[in-house]
Image (cartoon, rainbow, N blue to C red):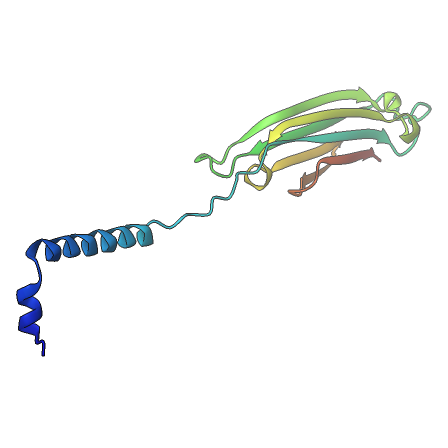
Length: 161
């Protein structure tokens, strides 16, 4: 009959060392692989070009109006903001202000079309803002818009009344 002492006395010390070393290596490898988890990397959105089309026209033909010589000032503005920028300041892509007599303002059929491409927009990280407006006598009209993230083109109609 064998006892524990018999087994210990017949076990070679080198075999015990190899077994202990093997056990240590297996535990170390399993610990290291358990600690190293693969992180899921979400790719950054690819930059896209967005287009703004301004259509400027009068709601009526002012060429024969007694107010035809009076001037209207039209302002068109496009800017982009980087949400991660510390200053929060935007970059102007287009800032156009021009003044013209009402009689020179085209009607809808002959509207003035100004098209501007905003290159390399980074989706939700970089919103694009659009402002259009006009000033006539003591009256001012303006409108602000923002591109929605999936929108590639925005047409802005500025009608002078």
